[in-house]
Length: 374
Ligand code: OSB
Ligand code: MG
Image (cartoon, rainbow, N blue to C red):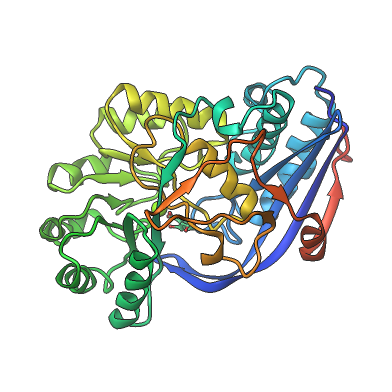
């Protein structure tokens, strides 16, 4: 495919409610989008980097620079890009920066799906018509506040509740939730807030029958998680630690986790996500699709990848209205009373972009040049 233009944008969009994790509070998102035109079609990608390098090393301004001056020029100058799967090779010289890489690679997959007149989910090898949905609930001011939020999300149909946790917002919270709802599917996510010295404390959580404990310790660790996993009945799920197929193999081999949260941006795009997915499938380790507070573009990519066979647990991909007053896609993402998202069967992402709204929310916009100005 001939790449006609690559335009990068930064959009500022307030969340409808603040999202608090063990590493901080997000109130406003800075969303980076790539808009790639080729042969009369337009593909879109979203960068899932956060505003600060708190979840991973990547962050909005760093990703913007890498996209504009490193990856974008490589893609703009490429002569032989036919498939999304050609991007990892093209970007090989740039180390890390996976969320930035995924932004462009995923837009190429989107273009490819449109060119082949296939739903993106089918191009990726997906097998589901609907995907099961859970929600990730941020740390709240009080336990009664949290119980009220859970009540609302359960009434909306969500199949799994994930509680963000940290020291001081854990056992009492799990106890209160389990007392009220003994049977719901419940998990927690510490975003690396604990250390191995907390192992005895974490082991007491076994009584809460959690589906998993997500990334309890260091964001870059396998070894200490494998020690912790031996001391728990509850499955550990790794998120931050898994960047590629080799990481997944190491974590599975070392028994550092029994479940993987497989995020597109964190592993560098659809190609590596499929590789991690397949490695986990072959070894009987289920995966699910995490979220990064995405706009509709990233959300639609998450829906497509969640249709792969081994995405067998409910993900954190939920309705647009939980994040945005107005989403930048049409229709916005909605969830059925059964807690499922119906996967679009039209070519490409299956959601239109609201171009006027994107223009209105854009605070910077730059066209990538085929050769960086150095
Ligand atoms: O650890 O899964 C995480 C949001 C931002 C950064 C990290 C994480 C999250 C979430 C929110 O849990 C998932 C979502 O609703 O998009
Ligand atoms: Mg997580």
